[in-house]
Image (tube, rainbow, N blue to C red; front, side):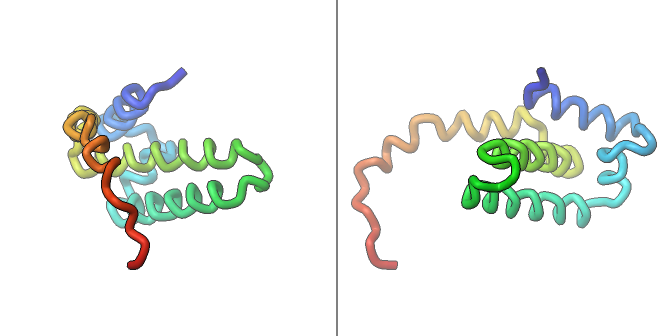
Length: 110
């Protein structure tokens, strides 16, 4: 089983030690624009999967596309020098903050 830490570290290793012919190597060779394009595509596919649960993979479509998005986000972070620890630290800063917003009145007219 691969967790996000392991995935991130595998991508870091592929950046340092390219494996010719691998998809990760392909993305790094193509550069930031290609990586950003893939993040955008995968984000859209997550939205489509969530809105259309009757797709060929059923509920698994959202899981499949979410995994693709997480992978491509990790590639982007590595390309940009963002560590997974930075992401976890940022998330930890937000812990408990949502409770501050639970009593806000609903916005009805935008």
